[in-house]
Length: 344
Image (cartoon, rainbow, N blue to C red; front, side, top):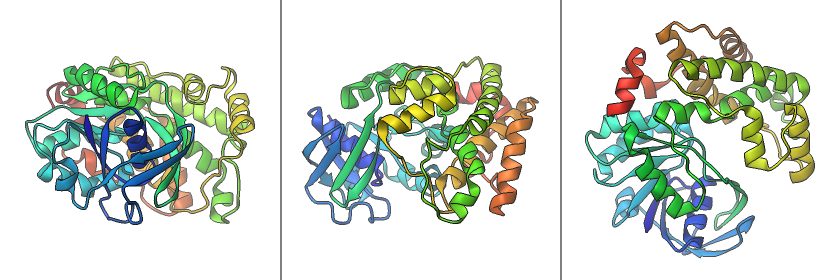
């Protein structure tokens, strides 16, 4: 197959390398052009995936999707409000698009912009983790063994899961809809708690290891936030994996108390640097499109989430900005989500 990778940070190129390693062709497009500057016809991967992989650098979005069998959008969630209309206008209606991660019902927002067409995939998280080490080089830190796939419309999930498995080789269990996929991703919970517990380190641009500083106190906040997320999911008939299980399946550490698991991750993987800028996506992305999104959905169905609300408010105070604006759900009737998610 030929896949169009829309996004050229770390996840897009790492996913392209994974697909090419499995015998597929990949075209990479950078919305700004910056991500593909210096990338030629060969992408070098190191880490858990090693090799030199031929890729096509697409100068335009139209070039990227020309002749593609599937497309995957991998950009920061905060970039989606400006980017989804461009993609909806340019992408062929019959081309399946998978969005990773599918935060804040982004697949539904895209389907509403585009109109009738191929199903839209809602990946609970990314197929890989990694970072760019040079314009033509990516370090792949992990290839996830399992990622849930939802879809818009919901019944199309098995079709997209089969496509993703062929491309990337991971296991792709299906979930009923894009909301279930969005609620599985643990980044909003872990990142907000971690940023709140280490705000002075971030503000002072100190060097610090994030797993080592997921202390017992930070993990207690994570568990309280997860409990409220789980209550929200239950109102829609969904049961997300626990935080412990998510850490276990991504990092391979034994199940146990969260703070012991995070310590084991740092011991096994080494120090993974925490953010050193107040503009970190741990706040600018994971609060508006994660925790505040939970609150918006909960408010529409009359569910109280006091710990989540307090966390968002304290982070807003510390960062000195409104973190609740979310164009992805503007105009969407959140009180009737199941029907919207089912029909697309």
